[in-house]
Image: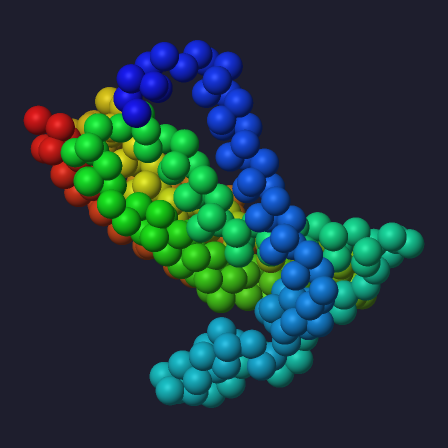
Length: 266
């Protein structure tokens, strides 16, 4: 297999990669069609869920508020805004884009598997053994990031931005596209960010980073994490801390992974 790979030209590898991309696109399309058909579940239950008072996050915050003696100060009794469609094709366009987004999330394990099968022939047997279970590990991190963004960051963002007013005269009438963009962007961003350990694994394999490098620049990384947290969260300290803590933990885990990879190479 290795000799065959050595004889293959760049265009041959490009052709193989193209088919991996085609199969991944078909998987996204297939899952997207399923999401398109079940729009009531995708929209009414999942996507629009963070705007309703009975969303699990709001119920948990209300329980915590009552437990610590704040009464109902953290309870959400009604949605602070209304969602409206302001363009003729707005709802249809939202249906299409949301279905593609859902298709990508559901098909992510297969997409990563396609990427892994393309990269795997270039690795040694010891490297493949070290990376055993990487598809499962990467898919789990991505799913956990999506769930973290959806259940923790999205409700906080939606509630803060949707209820913020510069004046009582100005009512919050949020467009459908704006709401969908907020929820999907925050969720997907967290899913991608949670892939940090996998990224560090491959960067260590090709020699771009080392554990010592990550330790030396730990403080710089913490500053970048705080900046990134401020970008993907509403401008309140609680949301930024909630995002920063798991990212800091992932950074520390990535140092351990980089150390293990480097020790195996030696």
